[in-house]
Length: 231
Image (cartoon, rainbow, N blue to C red; front, side, top):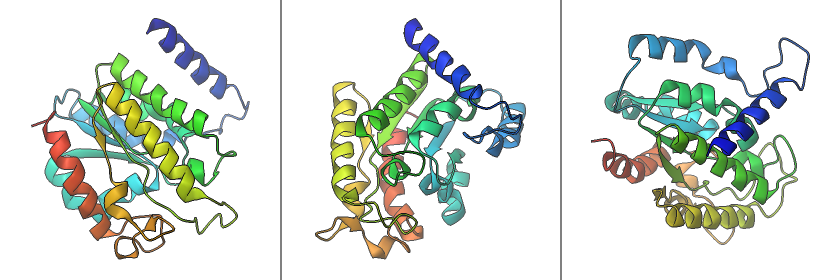
């Protein structure tokens, strides 16, 4: 485990040295910097803190369904457009330093869409495993969740076979969770529809992001699992 932490630190330092520009912020550490500082000032210790970590699917959740986060005191740390490569870099700032009891990780939609680089399932999966190991090394419980269905991406129509890629990655995440005794929540099966395995239009406006009804489906799946660990 010490070797892993040293590797993670080396990755972190290397990433910071990519650019000499003081304004470089590829992982967007600044997105939640002020909110993180305020949270830790007001509640430095909270044994029931749960962080939802992810991309725009996670970022949009508190605005579409604010009562879910407010009523449960959940913390949303999603950033639109991000891939797991960026997740790994900001995981320390937006998860570990908040000292949550539990983190819910939803990842990889933008990896498949190739937002930052060509899709490589092995590397995306390794990024997810890295976040799990960082959390566990710091005493934080983890819930892994499936990547949501997406037959195509409006901003990247050139991406093909996204449904196959998502299904393959989800199978791999589920298997990893089961073999490592980590809870896995399958949003995918409740949201997918049709032969092209698209996100059900009843639950989305663009085929990628859930609408309020879609988030309700997700809430009904994730909340009982959270409550098994955080009453």
